[in-house]
View 1 (cartoon, rainbow, N blue to C red):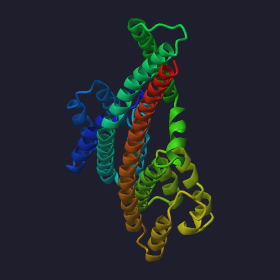
View 2: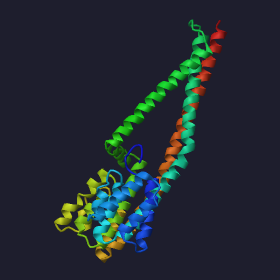
View 3: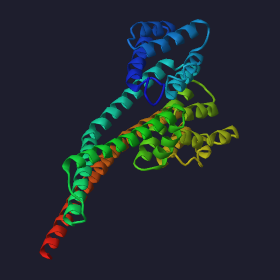
View 4: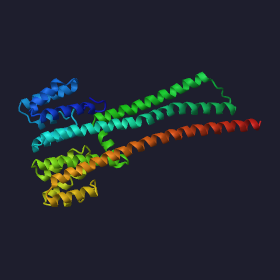
Length: 346
């Protein structure tokens, strides 16, 4: 389980989805698939979740009921897609989609970590070295201005260690607050607001959400579900409360008999390309295929936007380091020239 959430970590969800997809594709019933996956699972927490699901289905529950009972530990996207896949008779496709989706998510997270590791290390070193240099310059300036202070390197080191201790405590408090908010389910709304409306994360969030939405809709429509139910269930898998609320605006209009293009006219999260694909799908009678293409388009856009976001964050961190180093250098030379000027005026 993760520190910020009781949910199973992404790196553990990936092999779980792939194992279930492989077993089910091989013609093994879902109950037997869960048993096999549980037997080969080394992680205790994941194994317990699978065993409870297996027991629940064995006692007569549906797969949807079994996964919803584990909503504390399983990602919402995982729950909604399995539930809708079972209802629409597309469980095999949903399992493959889940496996591929979480593998893409894990790879994107690893790429982000790789891209930001060096800039973050630079930022940390700049903080420690910069605070040390600025404090030293301040002490030397006070010494040469002759305000009665003496310089003791040992006392300065003690002051520096106290400063870093206070900074560490502040960081620990902020980190603890984030953990508490996350466990309480509030951090997701705070982060969701940032990720939805602040560039460059806004485009990444929007594209990934729409990719999940259109892919889920294509599967549910192929499964024969009513279009309003397809929208309701697909909106949930965006994993973003703000996008879900916006997409659900189309449901009342669909119930009133409007076309999809008319129903989504006031949904602002859709791109012009999204509306065009909806229109083409409706007029050609190939709505399922058109929605799948829309999903692929938005996924490609999401990957591109994620790459841009990583570069922007990397440049922002490097720029912050450069500004801090520049400030230290300027402060040093200003202090140096002040001391020289003071000596010349003596």
